[in-house]
Length: 111
Length: 266
Image 1 (cartoon, rainbow over the protein chains, first blue to last red):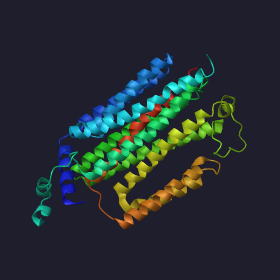
Image 2 (cartoon, chains in turn blue, green):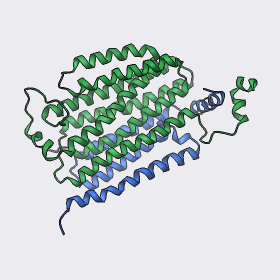
Image 3 (cartoon, rainbow over the protein chains, first blue to last red):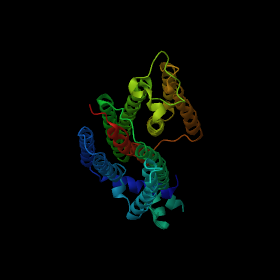
Image 4 (cartoon, rainbow over the protein chains, first blue to last red):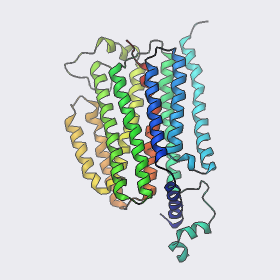
């Protein structure tokens, strides 16, 4: 690793030293609790669309916590946060274009 | 220049700052993870597409499967905590704690893979299988799964495709962390694990052949540590951590979509 990279790495390491250990335990606890809620909901015989919405909502919160705290995205510069997350979300959202076709298959040939 | 090399901070201030405020290895890993999330995104979309377009989607996961998958989730979440503690130990220069936290992360990852392997083996033994998997000798499929492979082939195809891809990522993650924690010492351990996995699984199990991933990884890792031997620093641990958290993150979507939405409530 060249000197600039060493300097950048040591600066990042210095930032890490200021993060308290407690916040990681809180995030871990919150993730476990949300997992417990998800499992509980799976046995509640709910309407599938409603259950899917709640489960995906919880999954997005869990993903957000993992990215922000465990992957340290919360502490990155805003350019890094916005470019990576917005490009990823745009690409994933574009894949939704296929879902109407999946619904169409169910009624294929029915006028 | 020589003075600047001796004081890397001074050199860093000589040039314009990094666009993303961090070192290249980390940006490289983030770019890889973004591309990999599209791979998993495509697989999750394929699973969801199959589910929407198939009226009689099976719900094969009994309470035992859900308990197993919940335990797997707990192992992965705990491994993320131990990983972040390993990164923390590395930035404080505590090599011993760093190594132990990395080993704890590997243990949780290995537990996840073993539990997942058991889950797969049970489903295959019950008849939920793929045409490429060898048939289990002297074993008839349960009534529940007898027709699934024929009437809803999308289910086993997307289930094994998605969870198999994730299991491969977790396995490679454990190997990656093993190299970071133990360096070349991990190569003979990996070869030992390959032999155990290969010899301990029956010839009809997909894991009998899947175990060769460990052999391939041992060869690749052997070449890497032979060509570029180095002591891994905190930046290497942090970059490995990003990869590990990513496999945890992906499971946070697989678990509810694949398991919880296909729970069999009796």
